[in-house]
Image 1 (cartoon, helix red, strand yellow):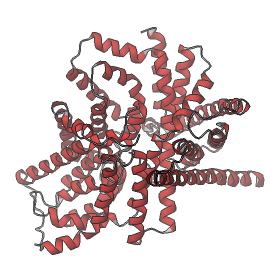
Image 2: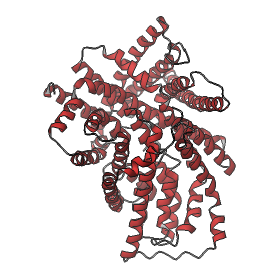
Image 3: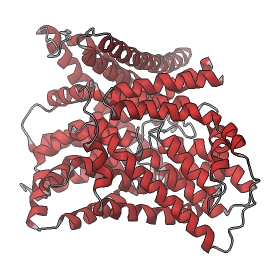
Image 4: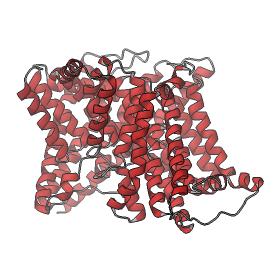
Length: 176
Length: 436
């Protein structure tokens, strides 16, 4: 049980750390845009700024996916979930996590393959940045792996305890 | 259309995944996977990754987390108190009295935040207790707040418009500029309703406000000046062509941080909270967009969009009839889905229809925003209703009834948009072209 407790704490820390990394990429986006504007006003060029911002955007999203899931910020249609009896609800939650887990690992599988070929062929960005594409793409893979791990983790938890590990914050979703 | 049976299966999977509560982004990914497997022989997984990567790593999309962050920072400042105190003296003498602080407050906060929930909480936190203290009818307090907060979706920066622009490849800046006048017109319509209601209704007897000298009024609202400057910088820089939407968003974040710091409400804790909140909300939308990008590719292979566009063309619907059909469709959809998901889910199918009917896509963006705004205040899952329920402890049914007049005004707004399309298209046609 000690091992499980340690694993539990370790996983939770992993999601939070990845989320924090995502937040750092958000700061990187802001910095890059500011630098790019400063360069333009002073008559300099910052080649490939738009591409770098794009890579940071992908990294910010993918690294934060698992953390977002754990905080209950990924939205879903919960109308049916809220009206069915408890037993049914548990079955439906398991179904949701199972679908999520399957899709998560499916995505990871092809993402790894995609980056492997991109690395093998030394794919280069079409933009002015001339980045080797496998570098930013690796961020997407790592983020996708962490998301898949979290979905698996929550699925197992759901099956054995009947509760998921998603923390609901009162009014989290500011997107609406 | 190729095969009705396969299409029915495809739609069934869509409803099954969404309805059973699979997270929307993942559900769209799953549906797209099924669609690709059913309709093509192409290597599905590889296509999926390429599509998702291309759409996730985009400069335009970067406006999204930044605008969310800007709203999150301001949400944690003293803006809530300042807004009521600063607006009340100017609006007290209008017919309908301080109820107008709800509407004007929402309009102002909508101009710094792309979210209607944040707009609602920021304005409502202060105005609900203050208005109750002054004996304003509860029904109007709640109703106007629910309705006016939806302006957060229309007045730039608007998350729904960013998502719409990214989905159909339209300029975000132009969409933002297009949203300004309709947003103000809608706010004016809300205010007109309040003014008329206050004269007609028998139970509208709020306490009188004390008279204030002009100097005092200015003194009370001096805290609002920085906010107005911020709005002017963000929207002005886009309108005058100094900055793209993404760059204006960066101005917005920096301005919001400076504003918060100068008020003394920027601590390490609020900074972290705002940053992590923005990261989460943006990741949430990014997952939906990732799923949607793959789904719209898959939709293309199903032949559904083309089939429907042809079907509509064969039916010889007039533009007006088509828009009415879409209006009803989106209101129904809005009862089950949030605005952003409704937009990304349907655009692959609706876009060819709209193009075929010769409807301007910029204008349609504003149309669709008004329509998904309505969804915010319709039960069973109007998001604003939930937020208000949390804030006021009223029953959902009561809040929904309070919001009915606002809903009707929004329906009227749709017709205004159809009769006078210029209110959406004139401003973007006359803005200066900027970089990119």
